[in-house]
Length: 289
Image (cartoon, rainbow, N blue to C red):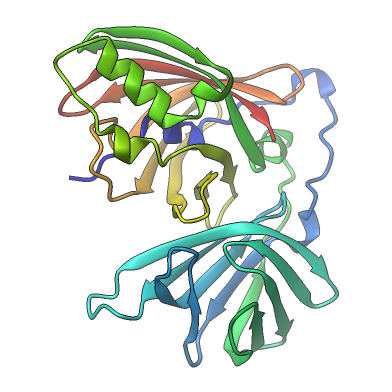
């Protein structure tokens, strides 16, 4: 059964309604370069930091200079899906990449050329569709990168109540250890959770509606999903994350409520937590990264 780690739930939370007191929100760092490359021609193969070889299918460039890509594993007949991520800048027609892949991607009409470090240059057919900048101040504030600063759990089953701050708030190993140490009904796999230290959470607007949770270890693939059900009046949302993990924390699909600070640089999220092993609420504070 698909499960999701607790802190990844923050990914859809950064939403509010209306402009608070006319606060001016600065344009995102790569505002005019956001968009999606989709490969339609011959496959482009590349190796992830984990050593897995994939065929790249799609790369989305987000407003704040993060990218997220999707590929299928070459070695498996089942074509398992893998995600990759990093940062980018745009220079002329080139996307300069860092992170899981370094090098550049050149877009020239329907010709896409990948010149990735350690790989032979490949030109294939495809296209780039630009994502229009958001015009609503709420969406301008929402679709950026976020970093968790505080996480409070109030779990009824099994009973756990604690506020995690500093690095513990985004270190899922620390959260899992606390849960193990303070109740006996559920035991979480610390070897698994210790791999997951969240670096940033990134969001993009329609049509992609992407959630990306990136981790400090480059060998750990990002968790990626989509948001939906965005209700600015009721300040509510839903999300679905694609994460095949063996953990016992929180399902990959959930809903919750949210509120921005007056300057739109901090958000507080309340989520209802419900899985086979746990019931309760979590409250997450995230700051603009």
